Length: 295
Image 1 (cartoon, rainbow, N blue to C red):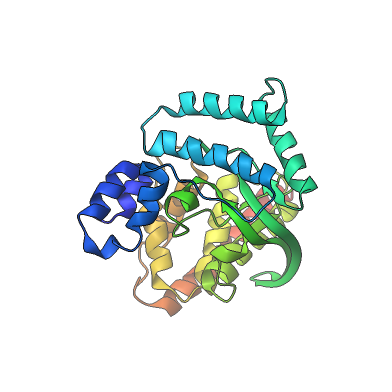
Image 2 (cartoon, rainbow, N blue to C red):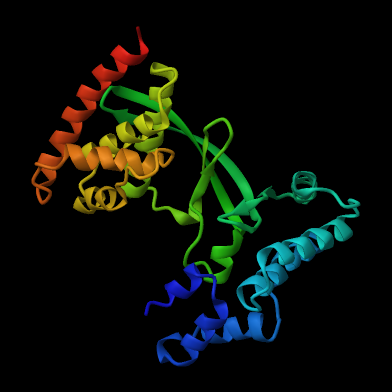
């Protein structure tokens, strides 16, 4: 078994027992024992009030992922303790999040609060750098702004549990701007240049060109753009693996299902064929969208 399976399940106690039985983890085991068995929590190089806040989140993670306390009960305790620390008198989640952001900002840090995949977890970093990229797309060049987030202190629960091995790479702001965590990306990789930049830039272009376009249509077009520019055969395999029309509200699954049907007769071992077919499908779909939305 790969140890990552324990973290995906949120089973830190099981991960520790697994590490104790396998010598290849002897270097990282003491860190887990210190935090989860001995409750010697991490201290961060930030002002004391921020450390006090982050300590409450560390205890919340231990309660859920090591002690097995139900998330709802652990959340209730976390929110009460945050209210007590900040003297906010039983504030709700949204009010607490705003207050927390205010406190971090006053102390020189950017932050984001809320839940990631069902669990509370702060994102805390030092600097946000808005960066405009020139992105080549099938329909021409587009400008796309990405906020590069630098100097991370805390990156929510998965990063905490895995000592930085896994964690969120970024998120979208309400206005659609991508916030990209610098430490999570190789900025010369296809993962960034194609699967993030070209994918998201195509969304922006399509939402302007085709008002009312469906989310699944957006995803289908962006996936075709990825396939046209990618030199990685594994990308098509990834889309085929996630293809499903079982849930109409699963836009990614549905878009991948359309990709699967459209590439049924293509040699999936030939990258040039895949790139060519992707562009043909994209151009044909553009004509469909023009007829559907630009009447």
